[in-house]
Length: 459
Image 1: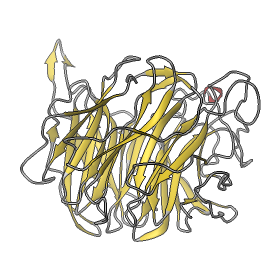
Image 2: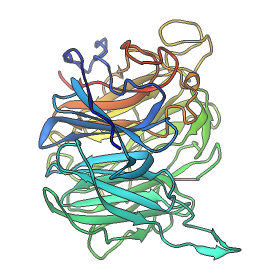
Image 3: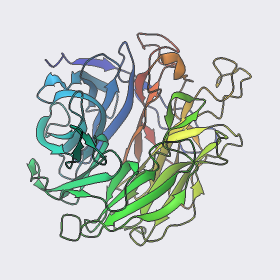
């Protein structure tokens, strides 16, 4: 049964100028729950930008995901648990959110027990409630000795995005990537998911993302390989007409990352990280209309734990890509990881956020909790106003310093973070156990709560 809503009030959020010496924005502990929350997704409603929605995993035994809704830009939140055998079934994890231009809010996630189906839910009241609208089954595998073998063994890490009158879902099916799309005719008008396709050339490719272009074209990115500490290549696949008949073309190599699918680093020592590539496509009609952006982590030297955040762009639908632009501006050899990118559809400007260990030199101080270098992390970000050619001085977004290993959460900070950028204000979401706001029920350096902040780009 769905649990009762709770509402919390926090102080008004100050203006935060993207420049050196800027004041850290007011942090908000959105979840304020005992136990761990991680792997968060956030979406801003383009028809009402004060409407912000966050969903995350919980560390609770049994099904259910944490959900929070704000209608005042993140100052107050209504909280609940969804998917605990309510209308959304036995939800477990890996949520992904996307608002479309009509104000439809789409949610995908994984079931707690069923490992062969990805559900899709729809909200038409700004995230206060959801209705299940589809269960997308993985392609059938083949049987040997009474059990399924080979490709298409399971489903994992779904991502959903909606724009231009269509909604697209991609997920890993045990090696290849699977994509499906549906038409959207208006508010509450969603057709059947019928464009189902195993993406060519994506065997052993996983941890994907999806973006929709200005003409309705669709791009997927994924990481090769699924396991290991080194190697790491990013490939994109493009469907030039979206819901049309063309289908996805063969994969295109974008870059090497030196980050494996399970690359263990000191600040993410239990779960490990991947390059965590993310896509966004400019549909603004502005000077960079049609430009696709790709964010990812790159390890400077294999197994050095010196991970940096890079952004590349393509102006020809993914056929060719620019050189990588380094986003983090620190001079350390510490880790930056789990990046997320978002494009402001009102301006075409970019925001990028990530977990960052630059301040943990193991010598004490605000960035070090235990005297061990490079195992604590803060949350940082940057903006670009010139089409990804350069980024602003980096901004410390989190007010405190976290240590994921201290949480006892088996997935550390999780596999990904959350970010939505609209109307000049970035809304990141991240896992944090610093207790910088003083209202984590478990106290400091214990269980992880979901934090957010309103980060305007000004000046």
